[in-house]
Length: 413
Image (cartoon, rainbow, N blue to C red; front, side, top):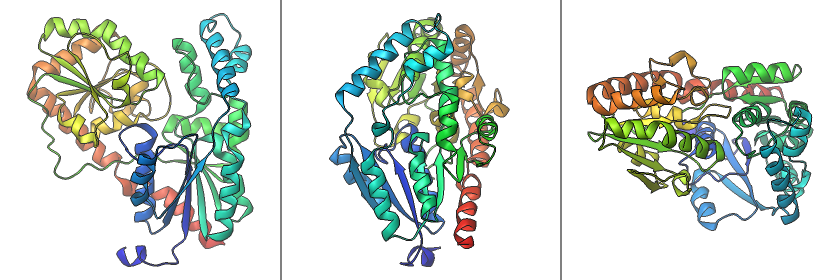
């Protein structure tokens, strides 16, 4: 493998995304880092085509060692477009229960084509395709599907990693009356975008079935989220009654944390007065991180910092789609985990075996109390979680179908 990695004529994979690879402590950043590492390990060179409205230079510098080549495209979004979308979505949230579905979708849908897939980004990719031997282009999220279409015109494999199915995520936001957030489009729009790709990646089984139904003429691959834990990580949980939540600063995470603090946390403190909730990641900087014995911890340089502090990990999210990265991380780090049905989406086969699934706030609290009080029970559940994660989320198992698809297409050329 080392000899293969050193060959200068190795084909390129272009990975286009609007999230930085560093610091990789949450969400799609972690997903993209793992995928980049797997592709490089398989013998490809990776060019990360990163576009951002105002990229931070510190992030850019930290990303360069992680890839073979980094290209940065700066594409600011107009203030008018942002204000208009924010106003429409505010109306959609307050009238979610009374609006017909068609009207709700009209209000929340992002129709700013230039911000969805900027012209500068497409121009830069065209130049790369003309100057590099590109085996495949992977576009992160459906709005970048035009890049997959560009790849196809140059004979490269056009791939879209959906991360989650947008119209399914939007439906859960509406059901929970969470303020619309992120890229939200109806099923018809999402299907039209994704049909531009040769291959569409689903992150879990249910969404693979939904995408296959949407895209009868497009190949759908299920590629879950692989994760490896440093060999020196201690699987033993903390001896302190500490609950850890590590999350990005999105509205479903804020909503879930507020739900937990309002309904479950008082019950937990009544039974375990010295319990502490430590919130890590960008979520810790929000106003949702308030309350007795709640500590915002900031964003760690490595996720292991958060999991070392945990007797128990929670994921109280109440809406969303895809495969929750923080759920996978908690399992891989051998931590007892209590989560909700949305937090376990795609992992239902392991519910109440490798982790505890509870949707009722009282039952959620009772499960937390059990593992805060009983170190050995937390340790045993954590070891079961780690064993499950090592079997299911090993990189060589998870990414093999994608690597094979790229190699088969390259061979056919």
